[in-house]
Image 1 (cartoon, rainbow, N blue to C red):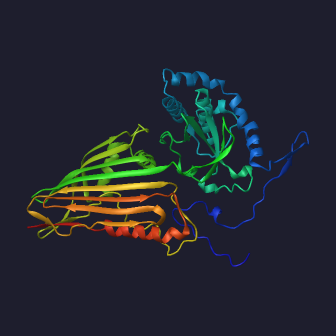
Image 2: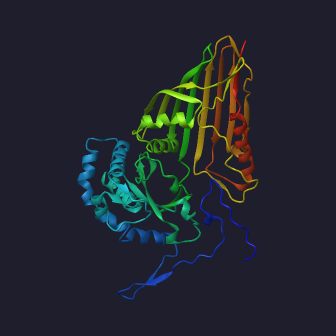
Image 3: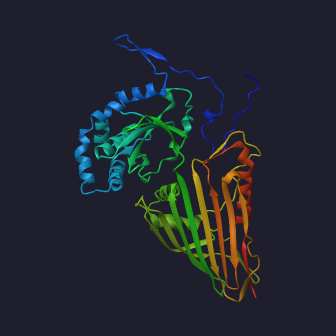
Length: 425
């Protein structure tokens, strides 16, 4: 090969391995050290499935999990609802095992990892599979390739296609994908590293099969801003934020970087100088199954000049730069999951003021229902209501969709940089 163009990494991309040409070799046979017996690598996925299920460090580990029975029995005692039982087991493994940050598919000893309360991803998630099955919840192992490891080509049968394992619990005909390595992940939420297209389910009650990992993962956030402009020009109100899915995970992770919730709230004064927090309240920080909510009593530091008061109403989570900077892109945009962000602003003001630049409604949609940005506003003599919604319905956007996605963000930036101006009558 000659004159190969450089690969330039950009934001929201999966592994460069997915786009760079190469020739890869796979082991087809090896000789057993002590017997001299030739061991052939399976040439079909079904053959690999059987090898994994019989492997001493994988499927065979589930034959030696009697040590979990008393622990699981104590955790699930008096719980009859199967979902509640599965959650109890999941949170027990999650809180009692510390992940050493290593990726793995198997475990040399589930018992040793359990006794030490520390292990790699294979130790922890195989323990989770075992514990759920002990609790009577049919749970399968799911083999996958993490995002940095590259996507799986299902036409190329290879045991090295995988480097990670998670669990799939089946409850009342509904399936839940689970990963217990992170203490902040809610039941049914996977870490971003796992969201990488195809995964292989080695099922306990049906034939092995492929699944799409990204279809049931989302991140959603809603910001509600209620403000009041007083006759003396002072602006006060409340900011309420609600996070679900992966947005809740990210927010919990951010908060844990501070000494406590007060230190986190105090950081807003430094990061957002136009805001002053007078009171804060955070709910469900440790209740992972519920939305995380924040409520702040705020004062807005608005600019005043002559008879005018101005400020940007997008006080938090404003988009100020387009993440898609290149004019062209030669590979897909991979966001990992769909997302939805809503910003609602309600402002009341005295009759002695008028709005000098009433916001205009606008809508921009991506092709094939891939996403939408909309702004709606309503203004009367003493109040303004503004709702802004950015919905990205896909986890991955193709090269052909790149320009429209880039234009969508340009529209968001243009809208969110506009200031509200109130003029004294």
